[in-house]
Length: 292
Image: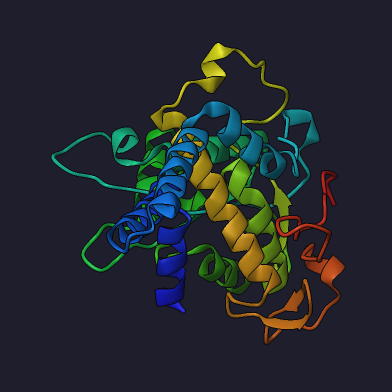
């Protein structure tokens, strides 16, 4: 399963797809199929351009980010726990924790602390492990929370889970069926909510770090290729691939019927966790925007 996930991660990177198309073009060229080679090279160029422009990246992210609305202070339900999903963390040479956390992790952690200050008595559950020999992101989250004034007794640190699925199982183990606010990047929230519900947890979405939420004016800059547009496209493709894997039962769950999936230990209707099959290959989650 880990190998399959690794291959899927690589194949959802736009530049890797372009590289594979370019290699196919080279093979065609060497075998005397010049026309096919030219078509493939043109296709590679078009793919590179489209994947790199903000217009495409935002368009791909927006359906993911608009599934769950951001939470304002007057919308917060009464819960005792706020769960933060892991991201990237690379401390070195004595740099500040705000520099060691990646952009996604920093926004998740800060948003969790903001929500905590509006919910008196709530505790932060910091999740995120790492490969052997690397520091876990949960420890980075905790360090930042302490620096922002969060008391030690308000922190629950779990540095074992290394992906969203294992984080979901860990939350179920820690909190049982108690409701909690789930903080992760907005584009990651649909997959995270699906996996949490499938594990038997009771999350309430609190998305952070929106990149394409709401209407974005289109200008000439929207058509200029750049690293930002490429990163948005790659994030979106990764999430769509994950959602498709869930709908096909390729992530370790059990597929009962197309688009209806439960875990080996949970028997429930698909509406329980929001993973249902809808028309189109990417519409594998039911649109949900209200609190429950």
